[in-house]
Length: 94
Image 1 (cartoon, rainbow, N blue to C red):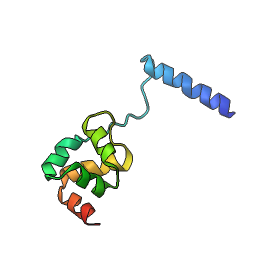
Image 2 (cartoon, rainbow, N blue to C red):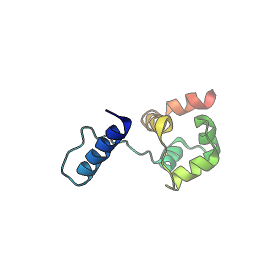
Image 3 (cartoon, rainbow, N blue to C red):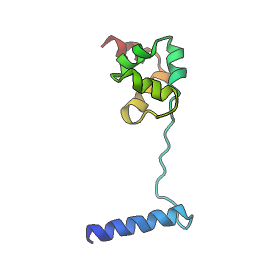
């Protein structure tokens, strides 16, 4: 099967799923961390959280204002910190 045909088949399947004619084979849902809540629970500043996560303060602000959501590894680390706050202190010490 050519790449074009594979893409065409995939898009047709996506339309069927969107229109409710077919169920998706897998649905992945991620918990979106409430970054401000986590930071306040830790009693740390935006700068301290940014340093520990290796990101910018602007990113932290965007997450807290819900303009963007943490994704990938950052999302997983934030959920882990929420469940185990001592992880933050380990990251901050590195």
